[in-house]
Image (spheres, rainbow, N blue to C red):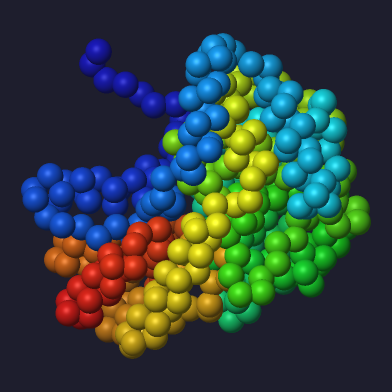
Length: 386
Ligand code: PLP
C-alpha cells in the first residue's frame, strides 16, 4: 500500500500521553537504565490465590466458550448482591447488569450506545481517558473542573457553566484518577440535584471504591434519591483485587439504559472472557484484597512525607485510589519538561498533569503502585537531581 488515510474520527483522538512515557521507559530499560516506575496505574501485587484457583477450576471444567452477552448468571447474581449490600442500589441480575471486558469497555459501550453526533458530555478535568471515548462516539467532551483548593471536589460553578441544551451525559469518577479525591456526601447530593435539574444521564465510575484512606466514605450516586433511573454504575475487579489482566468489569443500569448499551456491546467484544467471569465470582464474593489497601495506605503516607520536603510540590491529601497529583517543584514552569527531563536524566517515571486535561497544567501524577523502597528511591533521585 502507498499510504493509509486514518478515519477522520481519529484526528481528535490523541496517542495516549501515558503510552508515550511507557515507551520511553522501555527504550531506557532496553539500554540498561534502571527506571523507577511511578507512572503505572495498576496495583503491583499478585492476584489472591483463591481467585487464581477459581480461574484454574473454570478452565479444568471446560468453561472455555462464549457466554451470554450480559455475562454468566452466577456472576450477575454475585454483582447484584454486592450492589445491594455494599452500595444500597438494587439491580435485577436479569437485564440490569452487564459484565464487560474491563470497566473500560463498560464506559465505552455506554457512551457509544447513548451519544449522538453533536451531543455534549460533561467530563471532570483532570480525568482519566473518557475524552477519547466521547470523541470516538462522535460526541463533544466539555470539561468541568475539580478544584484543588477544595480537595479536588467537582466545582459546581464550572458544571453550571458547562451545561447546555446539547448536554446528554455527565461522567463522575470517585475515588478519582488522577487526583485521589473522594466525592463528599454534600457534593454527591449537589451533583444529584444538578443531574436531575438538567435531566442528564450519569456514568458513575466507581472502579477505585474499595481503595479508601482515613475516614473517607464512598457514595454510590445511584443510591441517592432520583438517581437510580438515570445512572450507569460502573465498576470492576482490576484495582481492588489486582486483576487488571483479567479484563473484567461490569455495569448496572435500568433497562432503558441497558438496551442501547447491550446492543453496542454485542458488536464489540461479545462477552467478557469466560475464565475471568468465573474468577470474578470468587473475587467479588470476598473482602477486598486487605493487604493491598494497607500497603497503599502506607505508601500514601510516604509519598506525602517525601513531597512535603520538596519546595513547590504540594497537593491536597488524596483519600482514595493510589494517586497523588502535586504541583511541580519550584523553578519549573512546564510539567512536560519536568517529567521528560526527570525521566531521561534521573530515571524516574511520572505522568505530566496535562495528559489528564488543562487543569493538570503545572502538575504531575504520581502513581504509588510501587514498593516503599522504590518510592524512596524515586524521591532520593528526584532530590539529588533537583
Ligand atoms: N476507570 C478509571 C478511573 C481508571 O483509572 C481505569 C484504569 O486505570 C479504568 C476505569 C479501567 O479499568 P479496567 O481495567 O477495568 O478497564
